[in-house]
Length: 253
Ligand code: PEP
Image (cartoon, rainbow, N blue to C red; front, top):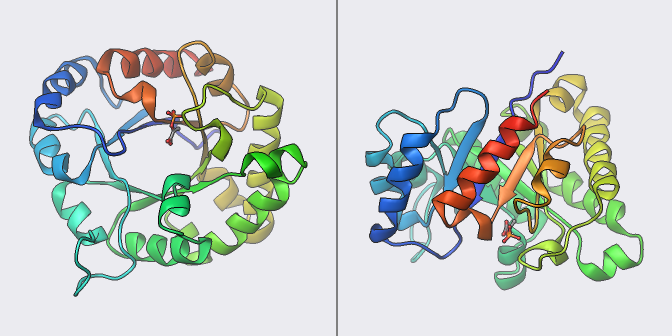
């Protein structure tokens, strides 16, 4: 029995100011959460305002990162509790841009995910290989290691979203073939099943991210073990994101 709702997540990264919320109002009028989960991860400065506009709860909101401890002397950081308080339901963790720029490790991702779960946020845990690993057929080894370290049974109880995002596919207009994506996703599902049991494997959503656009989305979203998409560039304009939302809805069987 199918227990996973498809989910589409727009990651705005470090883009967006109050004026961009006009576009979002347009989106809010055209969507509902009826068939799929629709999430936007705006910059933290816009979360609260976003939440205020989202009176019908047509959108779910996500942070883009959080700190691993609850509160304290961590200048410039944002806690999971603050994200929750501003209206977020999810938080993206371990995005490759953070792994690269801020040397975030899978151990740190696990600590952040634990804190997120504690505060009532669902983590969206990103994993993915660099080009060199892809080219030397090391993708599954890299993914296995990242999953092994990033997850534990407490985090799994919250049914985290796992986002497979090949680092070389992000913002590059390149993607793995549909067969390669399916291979990584079914490998991830097996990893969850072997380590945490069937329930976890059936309930955790495994989504793909990296240069998804209107031309490749239909193929990717229709793959057996792809439960959704993490969208960067194509989520910045409401009209583009809406198109992907429609494609995902059409991919439902
Ligand atoms: C991302 O950064 O998570 C992402 C998927 O970006 P893009 O869609 O632009 O490749």
